[in-house]
Image 1 (spheres, rainbow, N blue to C red):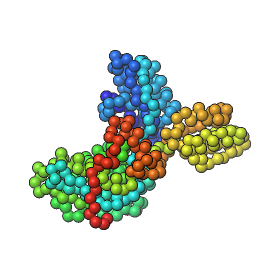
Image 2 (image 1 turned 45 degrees about the vertical axis):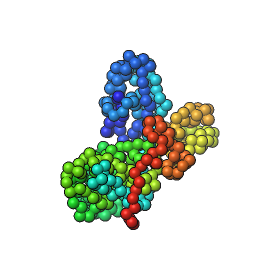
Image 3 (image 1 turned 30 degrees about the vertical axis):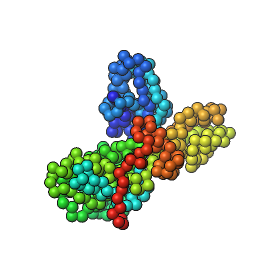
Length: 374
């Protein structure tokens, strides 16, 4: 059970990873002959350090060409055995687009503790600042509070009471304590943080990583006896209330988007536009290179639509167009996964089916309880 994934700051081939070249395409690999499994594991170790997380062997890369090179090296050089590969898989991010319509409530299993939570968008500017390390949990909390207040419009008091970043303690999701005069709150802080890490790593819609969500802990009701408010009671409770808060905040998915730069002569421009339009590409710049007949076309292309793009582009332009792709940003998909029959609901269903999860996820979540007003 080996998962080959991006380590912090490093890629599969030892190249330093940034937001520009992060791995956004992945496939599962397995050996054709079970006796060759140790060779596969050894080959994967040569590509990157292992992370024991899932039951699949995952190879992730920055793009289709990068993935082909990694798989070729794995099969022919590192492992030296024939492999079976899954279809390429693109990761998504889960987020919310509004503040929770009401306060979500979750009871602990022993019925002695209650957590009240609201979710709201963190904002793309702050989300990117966290991803780029400009705002991080290692900063002095007073300095960070002033940065959030001055540059992102936060209330200074709230900014000083950020409990955690998640997932992995550095991700672009925040748990903020906005309670007033709650007893025993410090004793459950670690449990709430653990619940955030769990929920942010496996979101409510399709167990994809959360991105750009701020969770406000509104209130807490705790049992007076410490034995009844331990981690075993409060960690799952925190996860449930975070999920409920997300469902009340118009959840959606974000897909990764490539920045594509294409060099081509004027005669091939029509083929380039046609190829991009079919794949939901958006052209935002077209310039002629001074003193040459070549044009530079810049566009955004969803990673999920990029498979086979290079070949299709060559065919549409008779080999006259030369593209370069690099990850650029995350973009929210239109619609709601809660709307039955919507494309987003179908996508969530496919993701959950691939992961072996219950298809009717939104029918099994804890019911939020209104507390009157916001």
